[in-house]
Length: 106
Picture 1 (cartoon, rainbow, N blue to C red):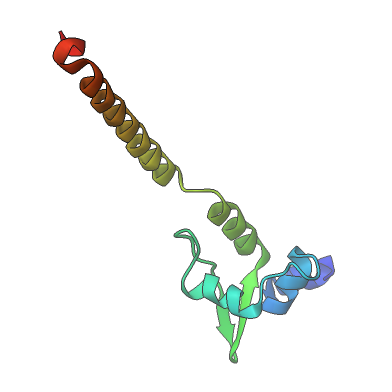
Picture 2 (picture 1 turned 30 degrees about the vertical axis):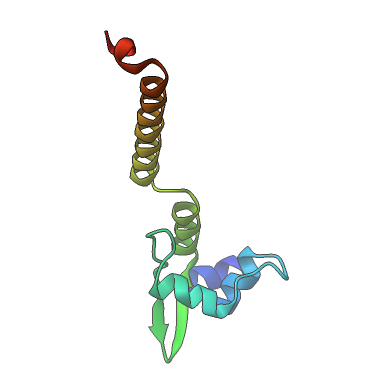
């Protein structure tokens, strides 16, 4: 796709997205691209426009989708880290209490 065509038509078909962003054999299927549009991935949806029964995606929207859906959301990661830390702390305290009884808290 040359620069002139991109300026005139900023949208790409799903087939163009597959060719442009992925190596042969590693590209997601058209069905998987449709799932990203309809169901999202990691809470992020791929924005698309349907014209005459065909789906079109802006290159900038696809790049944003790839960046945001690949990394865990900051709030989700923080919540998971806090739960894991709390669980580890509670487990350690329970083991110490079994071994040393109430002596560790006095």
